[in-house]
Image 1 (cartoon, rainbow, N blue to C red):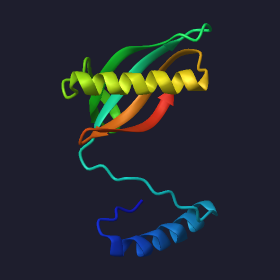
Image 2 (cartoon, one colour; image 1 turned 180 degrees about the vertical axis):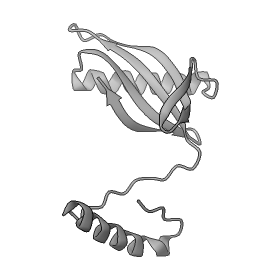
Image 3 (tube, rainbow, N blue to C red; image 1 turned 45 degrees about the horizontal axis):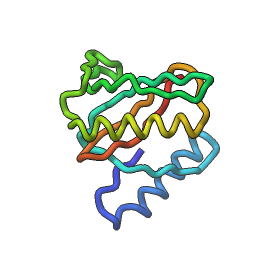
Image 4 (cartoon, rainbow, N blue to C red; image 1 turned 60 degrees about the vertical axis):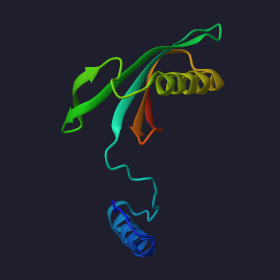
Length: 123
């Protein structure tokens, strides 16, 4: 992984990462994503039934971690405004409705500077 702070660094970083990837995995594919410096880890619990109903059970802040393992979960998240809370729950519901998801699940996001970035979903 490389962190690029200036535009002039990007080509060199991509080349270095490609070479390293090829040596380690026999594949020089490089994946680019936004680097977040101080994100919060927000999770949304979802339930979806076979009748097309999808509900969000609310969010929790799972930012306090040690070695990438959650130490403390706080619900509701103290850092989100009501509008942000409604936005992320609505986005999660809309996504799973569109996918036709059925069952319980947790959508995980990083949150920084008022923006949510999807990480993964645990089904």
